[in-house]
Every structure is written in C-alpha cells, then in structure tokens.
Amino acid sequence: MGQRTQIGINVKFIGENGAKYIERGVYHYQWGGYHPGMFENLIGLFINAKNYVLKAKKDDFYMNEFERKFAYRNWLKMDFVDMLSSDKNYSVNEEIKYYDQFKDKTINTLTEKEYYDFLLNYQDCNDGRIAVDILLDGKNSYCKWNFLKYNGSGSFEEIIERDLTGNTEEIMDYWCENINDEEYKGYLKSGIGKLLSFVEYIGEFVDEQDNEVQ
Image 1 (cartoon, rainbow, N blue to C red):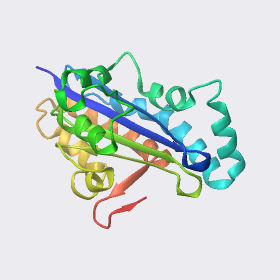
Image 2 (cartoon, rainbow, N blue to C red; image 1 turned 120 degrees about the horizontal axis):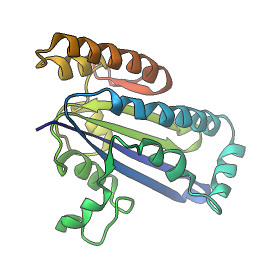
Image 3 (cartoon, rainbow, N blue to C red; image 1 turned 180 degrees about the vertical axis):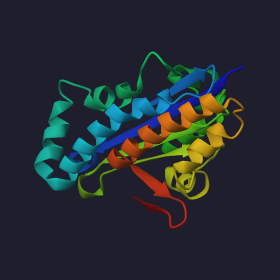
C-alpha cells in the first residue's frame, strides 16, 4: 500500500451587501512512496492567491470588479480550486453523497464546520493533508495554509490552534522518518525543501507557538 495524502481548499468571496460566494475542492493523492508533487500544485495557486489578496486589500475598486466577473466567469473555481487539479490527483468532492450527515448537500453548500469535518475525517487518507483557506473580503482578505499530520475537527480557527504543524520543517521530518533508503530520503528532503522555501514566500503559514499567521 502506498502513501495517501490530500489537499483541501476553501475559498470565500464577500461581495457587496454581504453576498457570499464559496468554492471548495478536495483532491486525493495515492503515491507509491512519499513524493513532493503535492507541494508543486500549491505554487500556481498561491501565485494567484497573492495577486487577488493584495488587490482586495488595496482598493474597493478591485472588489467591485471581482464581483462583476461572476456574471461571465466562475473565477473562484477556475483561478483557485482548479489550480490544484493535476494528473497526480483526483477529486473526491462527490464522496459527500455517500454520507447521511451530508445528505442533499454539495461540497459548496456544506457549512464551514461540515466542510472541515469532511476534509479531515472522511477520506481514506492517513499520511498527511494540506488545508488551504482563502478569504477575499477587502482589508480582511487572507490566504492561509498548513500541513496536518493527523485528523482534526472544528472551525478553521480551531484547527489552526490544535491540529496544524508548527513549522514546515516538521513536514520533512514526518515524511522522511521511516524511509530506510538514504538516497531516496535525500532526494525527498531536497525536493520538498526547495518547494517549501518558495511556497513559504508566496503563501502564509501558521506558527503554532504564537498562533500568528506569517
């Protein structure tokens, strides 16, 4: 059996008069061994997120323009959620229909608490997850992410406090501690280290020691 990992993304846009637009996705990876490919998929996403967040924080003009774009393009899905789709993973959004507690709901109509419950506790995944949370709401906008080694529950804020790794170095330690092949371990640490150094530059991460998003 290989390693099973996944990425979940929750994107929310707050428009005029408090209108909410939500897009989500959960992507599953089945590796023959741990692989840095999951982190590669974050790069394009975070480049887009940084661009949108900076504009949303800067001026209401951009927020109004973003909302007008919904008339002809679902850009939350195309510019964020779909950026994680690749030949390395597959979507598990439709698995919601197999659980009675999510009856008649889709990934986008779940409450936030239900979404994180689905992301963290309902997939065949026990080798690590990445959670991405993006809010576009003027000066309150943000892009947050981190790596979860174990299951969790609650709101995104509660998950940050309890369940996320303290820093990205833990990811390499967690993935490499049981690898006996020193050559492969070196390749994996090198690949993940380079990716994470770039990902940390374009995406925020949570420091568990002081609960600040950096």
